[in-house]
Length: 102
Image (tube, rainbow, N blue to C red; front, side, top):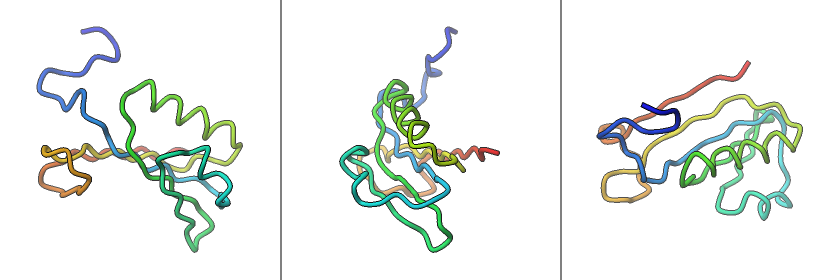
């Protein structure tokens, strides 16, 4: 199998919802730059970006924007959309993975 190819039976071709946790708060002026993402500022001083990513290229583009901000990346979490294409993320029908960045 070549790199960047999904396994047969994977949810390949389906958008994935990503949550990117950053150290520090982003102001509302960044909403246009992260178009399609919800910006949530936590009481702990962190920012959570949440939105759909179409494919690996779009994910790398998102990570490039995060890098360019200069804020520390704390974690990246992904969840597949449900089989009906809805945005509700029930634990029974979705994969979830999380990677903590140190």
